Length: 327
Ligand code: AHG
Ligand code: MN
Ligand code: MN
Ligand code: MN
Image (tube, rainbow, N blue to C red):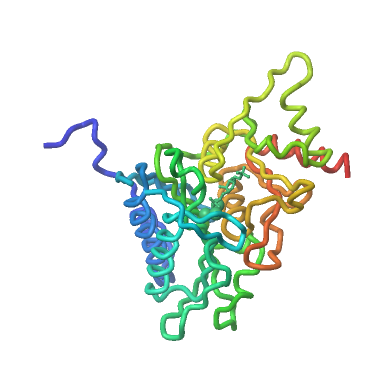
């Protein structure tokens, strides 16, 4: 018997992807299969995550698709560090293996870059495919024990004409990605367009001592606006996926700026900044380093970082104006 409170005709990610695929007669179905594999990876990760799971993916030039699952739990220290110096959790490692194994065996991928692997992974001949996948298997892992939302971030490039699939296929500007997305484990939401201006800023203020002048002045202006204007609220979770997710929904600005200690900020281009910048632009927002569009940056190496301010268009415009003025 059907309960009219339960939606039974759901636009799942698979359904969305298949609908899109049907629009292109020449489509081979390879990208659809690859997205299904990433989705499967997310389901496996969710089976080991304490929270539920919400999958939100956006496609270049297309809308945003959401899919819900539910599941259960883990989050212990592995006792190791990755190349960025992050302490790895067991779930970082498990999630990473899940994605690598699933993507390699798909036969659709030639190159993989993961936050948890020092080097790019080049898939062996015979299993190579026409895509490259860059990913952060588990974003926000320092938050797992606190039961805070964590997620998976990914971006997909096509292997370039004439290349047999090597590192040069991923050392490319983010605007050349064909798909980017994230899956957030826990909570729920629907998203469409980011508001053109928000009332929330999201940054690790513990680093403010090291900020440059433009950054300091910008955040100060949000906290002490001119007479008649209300100050912004601060919200900072410390999981990029969750902070960007909230920014997409409510508007405002998320930042991980450069500072005197970390001259390129903390977040990594290929699997953190690019996919999120891509998604935010698709939703009508902007992402800048302060002086340059994030998607125009060319990574020097696979774990390169870049400063990032992303979110509502008008808020990001304000950041850029200040960087210009104080240049
Ligand atoms: P990851 O868990 O994948 O290493 O990413 C952590 C990142 C990102 O999720 C978040 O925005 C940022 O680190 C938080 O850094 P701080 O603790 O320095 O604020
Ligand atoms: Mn990490
Ligand atoms: Mn991350
Ligand atoms: Mn991570």
